[in-house]
Amino acid sequence: MKINVKFGPNFKEVFNADVKQIELENGAIFRDLLEKLCDSPERRIKLFGITDSLLPQIMVSKNGRFIVHLKWLDTDLADGDTINIFNLFGGG
View 1 (tube, rainbow, N blue to C red):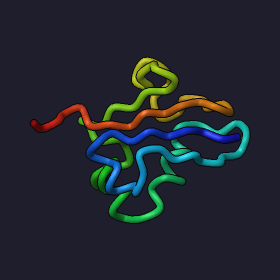
View 2 (spheres, rainbow, N blue to C red):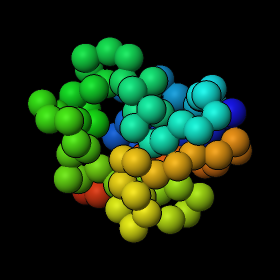
View 3 (tube, rainbow, N blue to C red):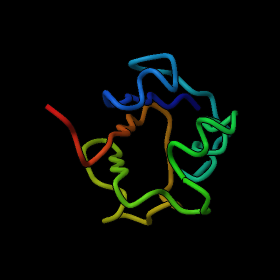
View 4 (cartoon, rainbow, N blue to C red):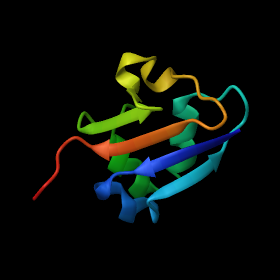
């Protein structure tokens, strides 16, 4: 299945894109997507710090709904889903 991932301003440089299409196995969950995205130590630290959970300032939505209101890192994914990853805090 193909998942569209949109990156907020603080992540575009780290992931070298505004939008990426990621191929995952059917039945994948959000945690699987993160493992595929975090293919370097720099990317992993940007999202997780030194923990196994997302940093508290990271906001993620699936098709417009925040995953904190779904199943968090165990949220099911489906072909064509759009995931937005952005930082809660922004500068001006």
